[in-house]
Structure formats: C-alpha cells, structure tokens
Length: 196
Image 1 (cartoon, helix red, strand yellow):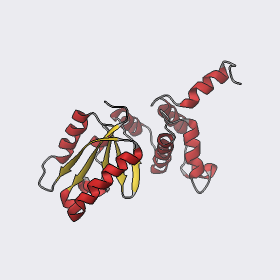
Image 2: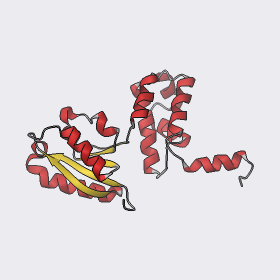
Image 3: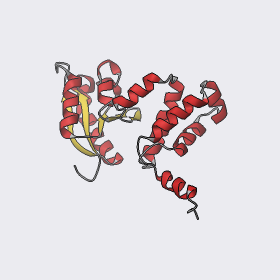
Image 4: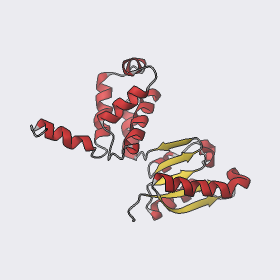
C-alpha cells in the first residue's frame, strides 16, 4: 500500500454510453483532487453478470478504501449496495457526495437503535466534516458543526428529530469508537490538568 489512500473507479458502459471516456477522465481527476491513488477503473456492461460480487472482489483484492463512480445510476437500481458500503467508502461525482464506509458492525448498531433519517443525515454530515478536516474519527465538534449547518438551528433540529438524550448519547458514543480524533488528546490533557 502506498502513502495515499487507494481507490478504484467504477462505471458501466451502458450507463456512460458515448460519455465513457469523459467519465473515466472525471474519475481520474476526482482521485487526484481528493488525494486517492487510483489503482484501476472497473468497467462493466449490461451483460456483466454478478456486478456487485465482481466489484466486491476487486475492492478486496486491490485493498482499496474507496470507489469513485460518475453517478449513482452506475449501481443497479440507482442505489449503492450495502455490500459495497461495508467494504469501502463511495464517492459519487454527480452530484458530488461522499459516503463513508459503513462496516457491518455499524449497520447492526443502526438496526438496534431507532434512528430517524434526519438523525442519520446529521451523522453522515458530521462524518463528511470529519473527513474534510482530516480527522481520524467523528468527534463532538464535527457533530456540533453539522447541527449548526442545519438551517433551522441546533435546538430546533434536535426537537424536530424527536432525538431523545439517551439515543443521542448512544450514537455519539458509538461514533467516538470509530477512531481517534485530534481533540481527544486535548480533552485528556485538560482532564489531567496539563492544558495551557
């Protein structure tokens, strides 16, 4: 593995049509712009059988962190398969949206706690903020920033989402386990009296 995180491009010839060369170029440009080492672009057609399985095999064999795709329509049914999200993040180029990898354990945790679509959107927004900041995980600061971006304001957003304090705490605690965030060292130093 190199110094940069790695990715594969993915497209379908029947979806790209005459824009295939342009879509491949956009994938390469997006990889460069977002700091990914593009290992390969996987090209399937409407005749390719078991597309999801074959893409999963490529992700596994190439040991990549992300899949870059021109539009979500390149996935069957226009939805990112859960099997892909469990293995890698997905960067959709049009419109540009990045979906973080969602390991099976996270998916199971989501299934055991009732979380509304609004709450999941808030958590995904916090994750995007953390990625953009280069953090190793989602922290309280990222979640608060996501809340503040909500046009209705933080308190109103929480009230509208029927967000119970215990559910909020459970989800936040789970996110905190996803990786170290830079602010944790500061918090630990503050608790032990080492802050400036």
